[in-house]
Image 1 (cartoon, rainbow, N blue to C red):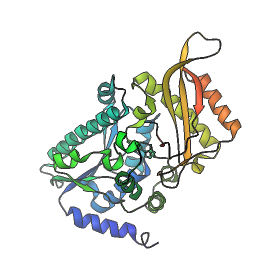
Image 2 (image 1 turned 60 degrees about the vertical axis):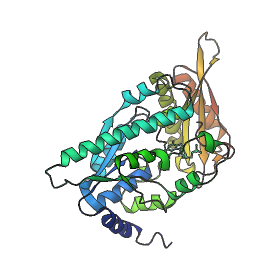
Image 3 (image 1 turned 135 degrees about the vertical axis):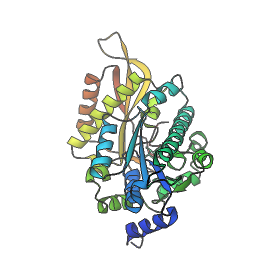
Image 4 (image 1 turned 45 degrees about the horizontal axis):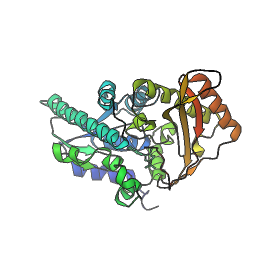
Amino acid sequence: SWKMENFIEKEIIRIRKLVGDKAQVIGAVSGGVDSTVAARLMKEAIGDRFHAILVDTGLMRLNECQQVKETLQQHLSINLTIVDAAELFLSRLAGVVEPEAKRKIIGETFIDLFEKEAIRIEEEAKNTPLSGKVEWFLQGTLYPDLIESLSWKGPSATIKSHHNVGGLPARMMNGQGLKLIEPLRELFKDEVREFGRQLGIHQDLVMRHPFPGPGIAIRVLGEVTPERVEIVRKADHIFISMIKEAGIYDQMSQAYAALDTNRVIKANLTVLGMIILLRAVTSADFMSAEPFEFPFDLLKAIVRRIVNEVDGVSRVAYDCTSKPPGTIELE
Ligand code: XMP
């Protein structure tokens, strides 16, 4: 299409013009395809004046932080800082059960950390060739993210603050005086994936399912504790591994495990356990979605493994709700 033609070259030129030859840019990376493509473009455009920040929230999946680090640093040579903030996030989330309160705390904690990083980067750059101010903040916002945040989404719009666009709310930009740079704002997911391939990003990463910024925090229904995060991590790892082994990962748009912290009984055991909820959907643009139609034997095999291998879990349920009326995440 017209958009695809020379997009990468044109965008690199546009970024160079916009940022100029002194200013620095910071951006959050998560290991997802959007932030990785955006970061790779910035690296091409302005080299090490772009600083990628990976925040370890303690709410990511099994081994995820380490994998993201290897990909971005070793394979894509992106200038990366990892901020280990697991304890900070988990302590701020202690006792919090309201979904919206969780999102707010997580968003604000991200902002606090980015403000600190922006200051640190400017300090460190003094008297070096990179001595420019940090003026820009990179976001991997896609076209559907913009549309979804602008359009009326039904009752959920009032109870759910928006992510990507709001992934880092306005205070970030206003408070710190950082301007927003969004190289992917006219693109759809499949286009981002195509550019990812053209930029030499590995196929596994290009095809990776999205993962929300607030991570496992919005997949634990109720208070987020380290033990509960661990349970979700183990169940999710079994779920995704078995999906990959069955060769059907690319047939679905997103899949994950979540935890209903209500307690139910398990046969022959006096202890009560919690409920793992599995969700897998197909979707063209994440604005609407259909439940993925699992082969039932595979689904049963997944359930069996989770119940047998993950301590604290008594039951596993598969969510068949479409979006709308549901959403992809539970909170
Ligand atoms: P929903 O639950 O709104 O999800 O149907 C649509 C897509 O957005 C992702 N999502 C988020 N991503 N921060 C993010 O970065 C968030 O707060 C957030 N909430 C939902 C969700 O995983 C799905 O891909």
